[in-house]
Image (cartoon, rainbow, N blue to C red; front, side, top):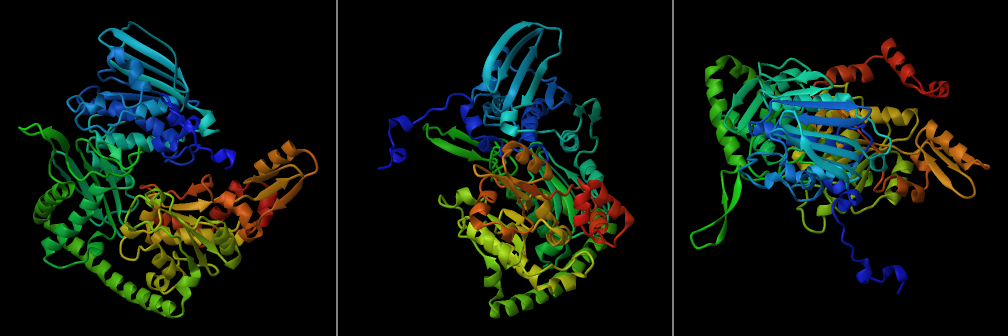
Length: 634
């Protein structure tokens, strides 16, 4: 038996304190990243600390939170109750320790598992916390989760907690906080907690109208009618319709932005369609009732169950759950109403009442539904004929090399781990698709091969786009013909050559998603695969470089006679090499579409008629004159 397969007691390890967080950070903060993406870990660290301060406000303590970010060091000061002085060290360093397990103290908080602040501590180069309570304070300082010093004393500070931390470069590399992303975070907190003021580097964010302010501020095009705003004890909703495709619905639970939705968003989508169908007494399809909808939902529940530590998807089925004992001492689970029934009842009653009072918007809504129905039926017929024609020609099987796991399959122990990493690579040409197919992990990575350049969806009619064989088959492969909830892969990865044609194909694919399936982008499903531009090697070492700067660093580091290869096509890279670029550490750039960004304006700038403004934009963003020579800007 090989020595490395000899399984003994020496292989059993116990990780103390926060060591496990540093060893497996993805379990606690999702991804690491360097700050270029709003989902990167440094923003999760910030959010975890602010969540605690927001929970204090939700319980009636402290109406202001001060956040400062200077040179990537973060400080958060709230004016809540402060951490109990004898528990400061435990509260920030010992996993599964915290006050939120006691629902008398924190009834409807975001963080309930006693991990958040501890993860921030573990993943910070330096971490400092100080609690102020009734003229006394207790403080502690840490380095990478290890206690370095602590103490107590008198203070004149107002009650509350101050946390300061610097994310660890050993974990996050060279990182930077993008203050635009942080500003969006501050705004969302203010929309969800009316009366709370958040100060970011001296700029105050406060909302008077809650979710209505969020929707109005984020509207990129004028809605068909003024947004409807309805509030209940533990629920708040906003909705309107626009002329864009897809559904743009923000969702929140206890102040947490659930970007990936969950049971509350599913219930809201169902309730909108159900209520409108019953109001008009017509069997309209749900997708027609929701086409072009713009809105938001926020609910408050006890003991929320989020899928994953980053809390971007709600998994709870009930508004509250609690373990109790009956008169015989038998443990039982007591539950409140289901989230589905609660949301349906609220929307059904309140939206119906609103429409009966505001009769002027009723025909506007029904005209929108009828228009969506007419277009959908026409497009559906075209797509069906195209799919049947291609099925007979066996085109589908030649274009899609599927994986053994599908996103919408029933989750079981065997495939549960593959849900988040299930991916489909969209590439062009037999050579590139062949390379990826050989290099991929067929358990959860699929490959879809485009033939040539797709149609420019921005310039063509919806009917013309529906008749396009390539895009029709792509949507069929993704499984989203009828509903985005049927998406078969969590990650849609555009993988094109690093040349003019490849960049153009990338833009055409992204334009298609942006115009007709923008929610795929908003939910973070669409990615761009980074592949190396250069290979620098000598007899001892190979280095793969993703930029001119990395190439120059590699040449300087290897020194001796080096060979430089410029990769222009994916087919030029061997499948053995390529396996390293699409493995666990593959580099992906998420395609980001902010709520307030106008899709029409973005597409006109990038895909409309050529203008001097676009040419100047390209020139400003090129890194060298050599690149300018290589790119056709006509």
